[in-house]
Amino acid sequence: MTPPVVVDGERLLWRLDELARLTATPGEGVTREAWSRVDVEARDRVAGWMRDAGLHPIVDPAANLIGRSPGVVGRWFASGSHLDTVVHGGHLDGAYGVVAALEAASALHDAGHTMDHGLLVAAFANEEGARGTAGMTGSYACVGGVSDAALDEVDDEGVTVRDRIAGAGGDPGRIAEARWDPADIDAFVELHIEQGPVLADAEVGIGVVTGITGRQALDLRIAGAANHAGTTPMRLRRDALAAAAEIVLAVEAMPADGAVRVATCGFVDAVPNVRNVVPGLVHLGVEVRDESAAALDAAVARLDALLTEVAARRGVGIDRTWGQRVPPRDVAPAVADGVRRAAAVRGLAHLDLPSGAGHDAQVLADALPMGMIFVPSTSGVSHAPGEHTEPADLVSGAQVLVDTLLDLDARLGRAGLGVAS
Ligand SMILES: [Zn+2]
Image (cartoon, rainbow, N blue to C red; front, side):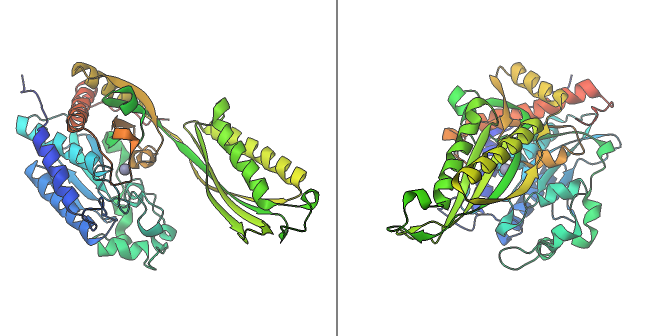
């Protein structure tokens, strides 16, 4: 009987603190933008801890840090997340998933436990989309999804993604070599803070993610007629902002009847934006999110009808540009079941929930069976300095992660899960 594999909570929390100290904005949350000096420093710290855990770390051509257990001839489990943060973000978004995957490796190493599967721990580069870039660069590279056009994208500072990757120790000319062979990897499991209030509200420590939300963006250009606010009679106005206001409220109302999970108008720009002029032009940014592709399709049709009706009734022109569509992703049921069993064995309450935010795991879902575990975010705060999770929940999450891997390893042996649909 091998000794039980138990995570070292103090080590986990200490490593998180160490990474939090590597920030470009001390005292104002954590700023560790992708490919920056502090991001590379954090990656180097984690590489050292990987060696301590018996893993062999490399920086791949996409500037991902990948640590693999040595001497593996069979199949693999992969786990990890990202080390980069938004500007003035928190210390847990991403870093927790990396440090917890590392803790799984450390705990297995300390216990002298060898799984049938090798363990690959990943710290993906540029999940957040530093300096206006598209984001998820590192995980896309692992599924062969970084095009030349993506490498040529220029960030807010006029630097290409290609040069950023090269500057952070990657090799963009060989980025195709960063691709993982899906035939080798049975599951990717990402542990992450929820970044929402559901688990904290329910006072439940473990979230079993059932799917990752999809998103449809829509940009509107509402053209009315600018005119004198004192002399233009109400019945003759074509007020673009009043039309936009109707649209904003109609969008807000969409989730109430179950059409989509959330719907938001987060951007508005009125022209000329002067108190005594009837607004002539409004730009409005809309997005809807749902875990069902059919719901997103239905929302698109409904928005289309709404815009046509408002435009006709108010005599305004509405140009619509359907923007980025991120498809929803299913979690592999076998992985979710493994998480539920792992939580139950430790006596931890768990709750099924969708992920409302995007994650590296959804990119990998194109190629691999994928699952995610959430821990509570206090008050649902994330991407802000106040991001917090109770230490006991952080430790429990890491334990459930390693237990899930052990559960799947015991069930699968050398047989694969198959790719989730
Ligand atoms: Zn994240």
